[in-house]
Length: 289
Image 1 (cartoon, one colour):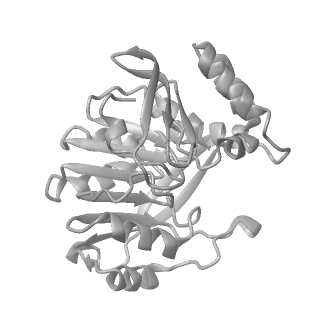
Image 2 (cartoon, rainbow, N blue to C red):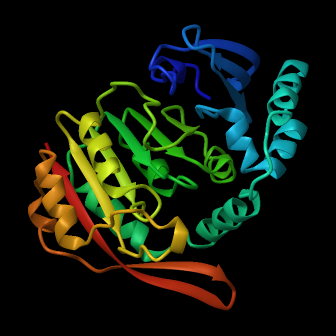
Image 3 (cartoon, one colour):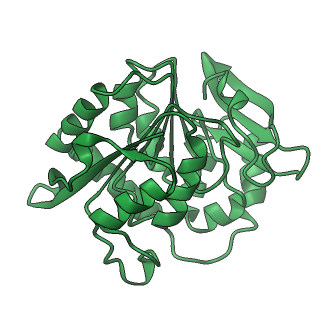
């Protein structure tokens, strides 16, 4: 984690500023603990990645294999003790470690999909933003590109596995946080650009739009989705389509960019393995306040 990143972060429990206990430093904060004095929550930094989850033991409950990996990766006794205590409070639920590692690998295999070059081309056509946030950034394909032309770029994702890969691309103005997109991880911070690509099947759409609308006073919201919500019990409660997405963006104060007023069909190809590829047609919408 970059030295200045804690200045931007807030407690996801109460919104207070966090105090940093640095355990290991080498150009970046490699290991440490972010603490909230007000609600006594603590958030670990492991492998340069802060995990800002309201209940860290609950996060590990869904990723017990990852918890064991983090314990092995930790370099200080204080972090090992913190992880051991957190793991002792986990409960038995389905483990998401394997599926998150698998999807991290799929995105790595699909980095050169035409979709990303098309998105980056659209972003390049917009005014250069100073402060950028990408929700659901995964392995950092878009954030890494934006860091070349923006002052400060953050990416958040639930997958530690994906962010560990993203973090390997070191840039002095780019950082990543494990967090829930709907949590107040950045408090009331205002961004010049917020991006959410193909996320509406994973996060309740209207809640995400409402949350992002509060993160932008003057700037751009770039959002895309293939509108594929068929995930059974894991599907979102209220899905959106090409038209209701645009209508709701306008309801939240965004003016739809002229180039994206009509639904689009950008190709997004995900290489699952050497013999199978998922082929989507993705709609892109750019809103401005």
